[in-house]
Image (tube, rainbow, N blue to C red; front, side):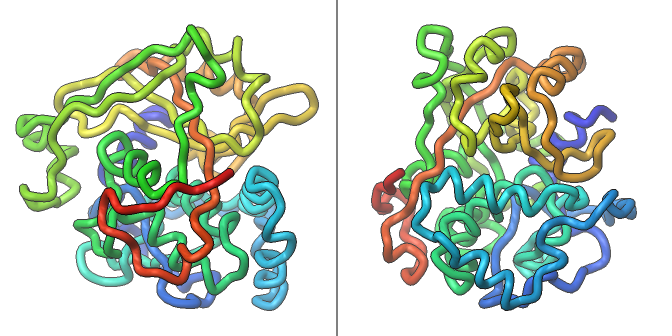
Length: 327
């Protein structure tokens, strides 16, 4: 299966996988999960070429790092926290609720997939100190309550709109691509939920989203024309063509990184890398353009925002009641 097929499965059916691992970070309070569902044990993962940036830190050093320069521009925070994950092994669905349908740990720094890498980076970057990380991660991963059924499993129908409502994300696709931006949709029907991949999520019927969800997209052949103008730290999500039996058309995401006059995607890749890497965006897009069984159609861009100051200390709001964040 292609790397993208693997990521698609990760975004559609992240399950409890593998042997439960001891979290690399002692939970300040059980910290949350990922865009997926329960399933089968993951294959053993080869160790990274070298350790990631978190592994050598003592708990005290880690806490100090998270608290250091907490009011710096959020993009700088996200670049710093995400850089610590470089070389972290890719493990399919490494997070869960610690019990129930998906008993995987709620937080860990020694393994990620493409979604949990972004989620944990956001929580760490937004936090003013380590004690805030659990509540922030809950806000990102769940619509309201930290339960499997309430997890943001689907990108178009749940993860993106819920985090936009909470003021944590802003769609900036049109800001960068302007007239090259196109509007696309993902349609979810009762028929969609009869497919094998959709049923793998094990969501009760009343929690299965249906409807048409709209997003802005930069067509694949136009992305490089605008890539150099995209700010580092911007979240890039990859879209494929809309297939009726697929519950999502978004199959991957990562952070844009501008360095050495080139644009890179910092992402957790299972393909040939099997770890978190900075991959030249041109190389990444060329590879995706070759996939023909489920065609990649383009990308969308999202800017992370700081939540209200009280976010980490309050219970998660009901859907639609969130405050608006700030850059």
